[in-house]
Length: 370
Image (cartoon, rainbow, N blue to C red; front, side):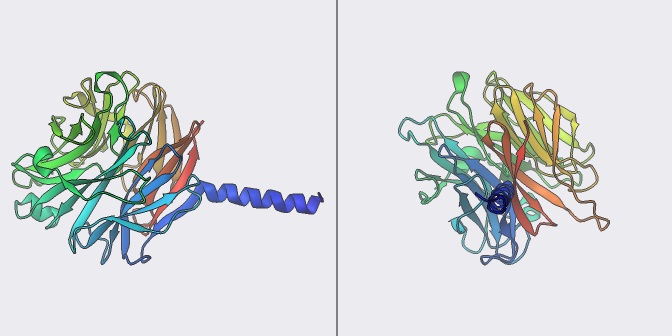
């Protein structure tokens, strides 16, 4: 082999490696949508990645003719399939994808994917005023996301009569794998109750769960801190559940955390983690293995910027490692990065699916943390 040929092959291999590290998954104006928002990602046993988003057909607004769409990657995010619509609500809103793989149902040894999502007939402001409704649904897939079941409405099981606004976690849900609640599917949520408050204290974070692989669902207790909003959760090494939420009030620009020793049914140790600054936005929490936990959010108290992946080696008590996913200082105050979700790609790598460039793109980037 000549040196020239070897050089060319090394360049090709390097280019492929770079491509595998970063790719554009969704982009405004493509595939019939004006805008794409609210990413969610899961990794299957086969290694395939499923990247969900909201395809907002007419504008970037939260409420509108919005479908939930999916792309699949067989190669850790280097390439992605054509876009497929997974859930829709006519010309109204389908939103807040919360996927999770049930890997502990003996009927489905290869796993069954649950996609929880919401529908709405009015915008959030009107729903908070009691003028509209939000409902909760799920679909399942047993063939790695190629086909999906009919939608199942579980609103009556997971939403109390007095609640107005309602949203699943924007990002993946979880399945517990340890202890007496092994097999439980847990979905963090937020809701509003009573009339809208100027400081957003009508919001509260909570959750719902299933112990029978989706046959029935139960409402978990709220975390008890007014203004807690979009939330995420992870299982700890002893089977406890760590909860992490947005503070919609914005009086303290840090993440809210809580801890559950009963599989997410009740909460204690509620407070602010001052090691996790936040501009009032969404974040994503993920168990890697053992005591190792990952968290990603916009680590900036001024704007949605400086998307940062943090790693805890002690069940979320401290965050010793930090990696900048993307940061672009912008004099115009744009939201450079925003919502994100994460998946384990391997023992040393985390995949981050995130909004960037003032909501124009949803990108995927692989980050080596070890």
